[in-house]
Image (tube, rainbow, N blue to C red; front, top):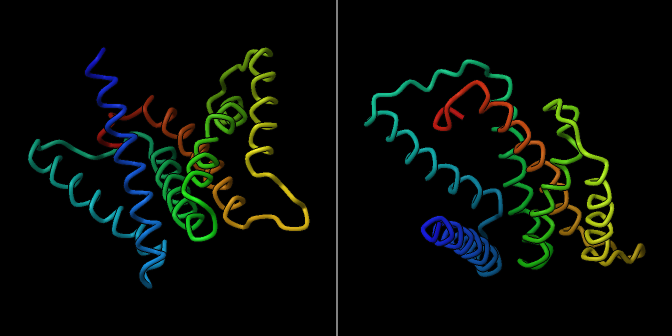
Length: 175
């Protein structure tokens, strides 16, 4: 259990570090958020192309629909997230991106055919109020970065729901 906690904390530290570095890079140079996203995915592609080659495993999916949905919406979430960093703070971008569980709860009954207990809708309402307060919406001056980061959370919610469906048909390394 301790190993799991350490791994999760390490992953979150790395995610936060990459976010802060992306923000610093975009502030100090002419590198755009889309370029940061491109290089992030390129490095991942290289790493995860080598693994199946070494292990000699097939990447053929049994259900492409959810694998493609997961890829498209995850890519959109990451692009929107890094784009939001150009207009809002790292903390707000992270916080609004991490609202994806709210959207998973809203999407799951439709995409995953899961029943959502009525009691969870109370938490959903409280979460939406919290999102509203975090965005501190002054209707005369809505922060563009906050809106982009929130859409990143929506896309991430769809990606996570798609991932859940894709895992019913394919192994993790395929998805």
